[in-house]
Amino acid sequence: MDERTRRRALRDAYRAQRREAAVYLLRNRVTGRGLLGSTVDLASLRNRLEFARATATPSALDLRLADDARRYGVEAFELEVVEPLEVAPTMTEADVRADLAALEQLCRERLDPSTLY
Image 1: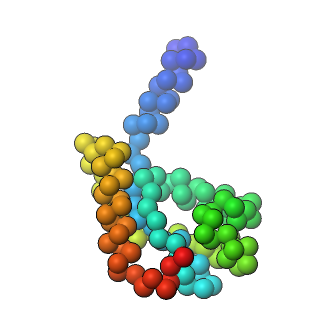
Image 2: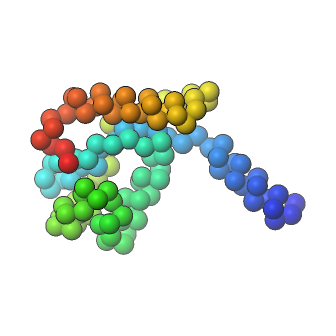
């Protein structure tokens, strides 16, 4: 197998992986406030949080968290999966994003706005 074929196979395998989509809350354990959001790739968000912790880099997090991340440290933040989304193989990326937006809105309605960033 030549290099080009190997790269194409790796790329195709990566794209075929089922990513975990979810509504999440990045909660500041010190203040109790949280940032509600949604993602089509929860593993990527976990990696970004771990990178921010490992390098003590608040800028790796959402900009809305920057002040508190500098004040309390990146270690003060934890990731909570609020609502996972069951992604059917027939769903397009647009379908997944639309369902996540609706789920996020429902979760936002259940939470006290004063506890959110």
